[in-house]
Image (cartoon, rainbow, N blue to C red; front, top):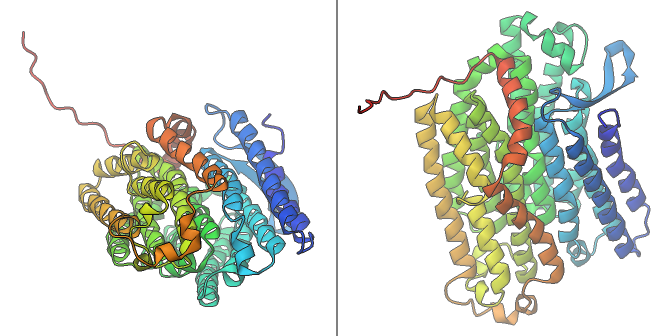
Length: 511
């Protein structure tokens, strides 16, 4: 089944769905939602079939397709997926129908066009699949830029009170990063043999002048660091995550931000191996600062959605140290972290959105004792919080453990400092839970009609798959690691590094 055009069909399906939903009359809101949900489920089914067809012991890149586009530039519609891209594509396929169902009533309350909102979600899915499936540098850059458009309109048109400011800030930051990438893409085409094909460029990477490679690496890295975001390029995320609708925020933090870390793994490391090693100490310092700094800021937040956004910045620091540790354990942990963070933070954002929709406020101080009124929903929030702080038995614990142990073998200081982020994570998550759902009941809450309604059937259907996946991968991550490991090992070979040899203490054998 490797000959079947999975990736091109997966990429185009959401785009066609977006067009169909956009033309549904505004008065037919329910129909628009049903069509969008059905379309996203078709993408999920096709993604599952592709996952089954992927051969873990086969070629590094599978499902390769290539079609003529701009012959004079040697730019082509080339798609291919390795294990890293495959798990990200599955994450997209899983999250989108869940987010669509979670957003079922959100837009109606804002009195804006329901078909437009769900069409923008499908358009965003189209760009997300495209950016992870592209195997042509120019095609990747095109998807990298156009994915800003649907999210800009989602935030700017359907977000909270500060939506215009947050949307413009999000767009400008990303656009500046895109300009750095464009300069690097052009430079790479010039020195890489006038081609954008990733496979060809990887083969010619060793011939690129060392100083030139470092400048090109920096162009790509800045763009990806803004997108992730890494410290100090992070300031757009709390504003965008705080202003976006809860479902869109789950996609923004759960999927879109992974483009940055994916880009570093897919493009920076294989194309510029010497530059990657040269810049690694600086990248590790930025990642560790991000872990501690963002965690401290999260502790002081009173806005629930901004708090979750800051936690994500800290988590991306863990992903960063795993990548630049240049060990198989660290790299596998980072990719696994990208998936598990998408599940856990997606769940946390969605549940926070349920609380915000009931209370009509994002502020922690406007809750207090809410668990007495919505005990089941409070329990789900508690579980999502524990998963976010990487409690053993939840999926993020496995990835965080791999990152730290993979980093500790080569950079003990960075690993020890990063471990402090785990303590801070417990502080900000438990503080949020206690102030929101525990303690004395806020006397205002019983006067809010929506706060008398515990979790609904639709909301149970939304959170159940994420809870099941978080628990499953917390105890049995093998289906993911079997796919991720070969791709990470190949990437480490591209960088020219090897795992440190294990040190075994001498033991006296009693005779």
